[in-house]
Length: 116
Image (cartoon, rainbow, N blue to C red; front, top):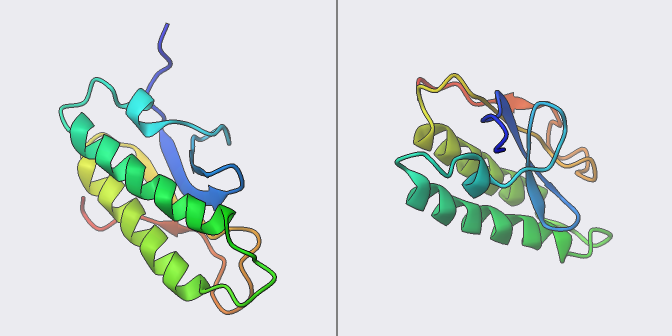
C-alpha cells in the first residue's frame, strides 16, 4: 500500500545523492510520493535537477573552497520550484543548509512561503 503524501518536505543535499526528506527525517522520492499528481512530469523533471544538485555536493571535495553561497541559491530555487508545483496542498516545504556548510551562510532553515 502506498504511503500518504508527506506533510512536510525538507530539501537538503546529503551524501548518497539524497535531497528530499519527509517530516520524519526519512529520505523520499518525489516522483513516488506524487505519482498521482497532475504535475508528475514536472515533478520528475525537478527531481532530475535535484539529483544533479545533490551530486554536486556528493562529488565535491568539501575540504577545498566549496561555493556554498551559489550552492544554496540553487537549492533554494529548487525548493521554491517544488513549492510552486504542489501549491495549495498544505505541504510545508523547507530548505535546509547541509550540516557541512561553513559559516559564510546562515544555516537557519528557510520555510518556503511566498504564496505558492
